[in-house]
Image (cartoon, rainbow over all chains, first blue to last red; front, side, top):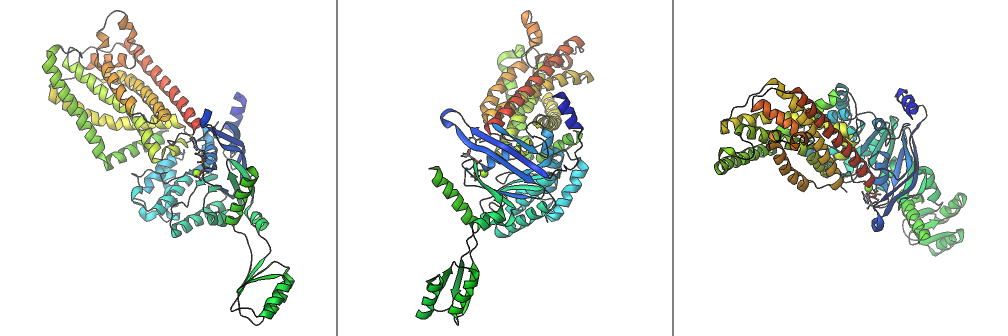
Length: 327
Length: 257
Ligand SMILES: Nc1ncnc2c1ncn2[C@@H]1O[C@H](COP(=O)(O)OP(=O)(O)OP(=O)(O)O)[C@@H](O)[C@H]1O
Ligand SMILES: [Mg+2]
């Protein structure tokens, strides 16, 4: 034990060559005792690499926040292990140097302090020397377009600015892993877009990002991978692209202007299309699509579209499916 | 660590100058309540009032009580309000570990309180007409007193972590403390004379009264015991706090669930 400790503390804090930033194994958490006993998280194993964005999705109460807090060392798992940049934050507080977190809700900052003061304070709290924390704070404020607000107490900032600042504060110690629990909650469209753009940039710098959100369009846009959790269990985990592909079928949706003649209607039905007013659904092969288009000649086309599932459909289907099989 | 102390001082100071009303109101209330108490006690009991046979000693006892109260309440109240506002979890994300952060906080806020307290002492001396002496050796028993005070601060902090609501506990404790600090145990005889070294803060307050009100020099042997007393209570406090932290993390109740 002694020896292991010594070897570890002698290891320099160089960037870990291996690109895995976060690994959790079998995380399990039960709250309460007796009748109140509640298994919030069951056997959650996740891996996150440098520069990767993982969207962690699930219905209310599924166990997302609990998992995030276990990763950040704020909730102790009953079983399982967390490794961040090679160390377990529950055993070694120094591992917290690699974690930045914006937790649920809008109070990750001191409201009586200004952005500049918050950044300096939290920088030092995360063991950044004060001068460096101050300088980095100004850089972040500049980058997050908050420089002109640096002397305004946080409570006077808009919700969007507060959220941006919370993210800046989470980055002050240059962590390898960023945990974001519902970062776009309660933001208006513009602020939401800004936060999304920031998340993308931050991932490009090579940080790993784990984010939860109920806005599935946000998840779809930002994530490289999704993990869906339901009642404490991961029910799907794969790359966003392949998940969407898997759930997309190859049907086409066509829309024309005006109505089909009886002849056109018959022809289209023969080719396997389904007509519903000026809408046509076609699930055949691409070459036959042209035959179908020919049959519609000379009606003006409004749109031709290939069905593509969005994350919302996938999510609802997955969550519902496992519900059915569970009950 | 020095940086941590610096930023904690800065944070405390900023919060004070931006919102001084709360602190100043608190000071005025404690000062005037005491002055009222003091006058009526003198009126009812005459000069041989049970808190101590000399008014000066009572003043010292009261001042120490105020200071200790600040120290002891500080961590717990800070914890409780930050659990409500939501910054607490960010504090627990510090690689320094919570005990070190809260110790730095406690030291910083003591620095501010101490400055204010000097003001109160001067005011009380004016009001009660008592004259205290301030020898430099005062710093030693003061240190051992503050250590024990921090020990209790961590214990109360532990209560805040585990029970969330600490107002009642703090309230009860306030009176216990008043009794402990105001009663001149150092004048007791027999078994109490040795047992008092086990009671929290008592040996230090006795020495302080010796120095400030009785013009007796510092007895180093007694001071050794007082220091030991301070260290022991601080250690116990830190231990209990660590236990409470583990407990809160196990229950997932850091943020006030
Ligand atoms: N400290 C706690 N004590 C008892 N139960 C808790 C505690 N924290 C969370 N829970 C319960 O555990 C379950 C999971 O909660 P969690 O906050 O992890 O869900 P979530 O996925 O983040 O939900 P949401 O989308 O609503 O934020 C919920 O049923 C919640 O009531
Ligand atoms: Mg949540």
